[in-house]
Amino acid sequence: MTADDRMQIWADYVFEDRMDPRVRPEIADSWRKCKAAGLNPTGGEGKKVYEKVYNSIRAANWQLLDTAMPIMQAVFEIVRKTHYLLVLTDSVGYVLETMGDDNIATKQTDLRFTKGALWNSYAVGTNAISIALEYDTPIQTIGADHYCRSHHGWTCSAAPIHGLNGEIIGCIDLSGEASTAHEHTLGLILAAAYGIEGQYKLKNNAEVMQSALESAADSVILIGENYRAFWMNSEAKDLLRLSLDDLREYDFRALIPDADWSKGLWTRGERFFSDDTRVILQNDTLRCGVEISYLASYGTAALRVTLKKQKHLINSVNKLTGNRASYVFEDICTQDDGMKKVLFLAKKFASYDGNILIEGESGTGKELLAQAIHNAGSRAKGPFVTVNCASIPRDMLEAELFGYERGAFGGRFEEGAPGHFELARKGTLFLDEVSELPLEFQAKLLRIVETHSVTRIGGAQEIALDIRIIASSNQPLEQLVQAGYFRKDLFYRLNVLKLEIPPLRSRIQDVDYCAEKFVARLNEFYPDQRKTVAPEFYAGLTAYSWPGNVRELQNGIERAFFSEDGSVLTRESLRLAVDQTVGDDRLPQKNSGEAGALMSALITSGGDVAKAAESLEISRATMYRKMKKYGINAKAVK
Image (cartoon, rainbow, N blue to C red; front, side, top):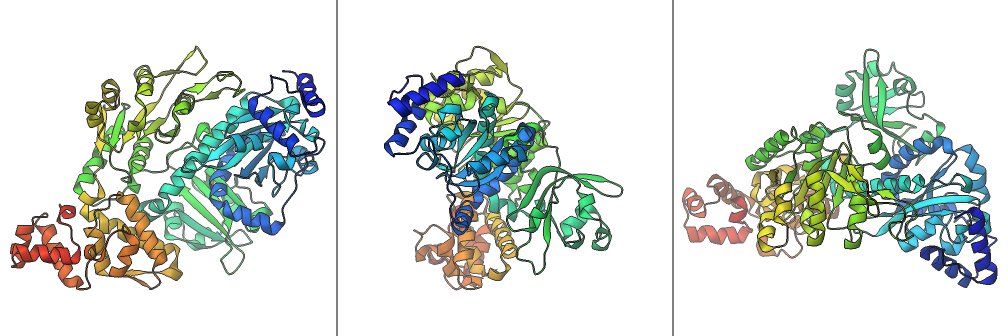
């Protein structure tokens, strides 16, 4: 459709109320709403909220901003010279952040397409952002697709960003002159949205876990206005192999020349991110991930430089989509012999390129293990693409995984887009909760797993795939095969190398071990709320069965830490840490010495109640009565 065609179609509707059947359904519906609302078609300038309101909106969306900014920065580097504007909004349509060069800035200002402006249909008329948010669909609008005349010089490609439960939490948009419209723009912005969603999920589910496992601690350095260091932690000393006195000799602008050391860093809220940055020392050059931010809580003006060890360079796909694995085997800590065997096998499997099946209950860390395998193998420099098979709607499965060609949905999506299989090229595709895939889709997945090639919806060309597949399930797939809920042939294709993660209740030593790590890390991050731990608190944690596994333990410790008014986590604090339905009879009583003796005897006897009672020189009946009194579960010990 030409620009003149679009203009004529727009004029026919705006001035004569005639809707052309070629108008896409979402745009047509939006136009009708704009007209019904009495929106002026010659308007379209955004209206900014007061700065105080904008700051509150930004604060409410800090997680989205924190996740999206590094990916937006990577995308902007790709389009920097194309005079396009990159925009991030919240779920309502308020502009949270923009990135653009001087050439686009004037037009941006004229339309008040700036931070703090509301950009929904009722405020500025039909546009890509409003349609993406209102209809939950990626879309590209060109010229007179927009309802307001002032937008007709623009082309916009937008995609919604979804949260943990599939809800829309924001939108990412790329806008430029209508004459420069290109079909690849929507594919680029859709890939960026996928990347933000993947990172958002990982951060929400594993942020506390990541910080608690100290083996991957970051290096932190504080620098003053002269760009010289005045403090560094021990991890930084080990990484840089320098003392603080030696480091003071370096101007950090020369030490990390790739960073943007503009004055914007010296204000609250401005930060610099990079996944792959040179740190140039006198006799060596390190490659690190870096974050530079203003330290608002410090007594004097300072910048905080956080360096993350970089074992593998991140390729262009990772920078664009955010599809990367963060965890390595050193991040997974355990004292349990069974879990150590799983890690031993996983390290061996990482050397091979065969399909891997990981089984384990929810919350045991299947994705973390999959990432560690990826990072230890030959594909570590490639992308790590996660597909949550349980969260994708059935009617979107093929489009999400296989991709689609232009026009595949009869005009619903004007442009084509790659699927997750293509995005994982030369890397790893992680099929999380593969047991949730419907039977009718499993046959299509089987063919791709067998041939390592994919054909997009609406296409005819087979695309060769150079990928490794790791699948996970929180249910034993073999049992699902026997029950008729999972295809036997697909099971055999995925079950080449198998790992079974034991539940936390069978790893009794890891309960205290992980709990101590969580508490120590929380004390480090929140010293003003520092907590000590009473023995009966740990005894109660060990006695509980933890159906939600490590994730439940992690959340419970954090809940108890922040909810407890006192400075000690006691027996009473257990109600905050464990399932709220647990009654007093499930919690250990105050006589922690006796409870500890019972637990010690049970652990020594391997959970054999009779042997434990004999070692304590009491009857078995007395042993059971005391176990009930203190809420001790012998099965958990076993």
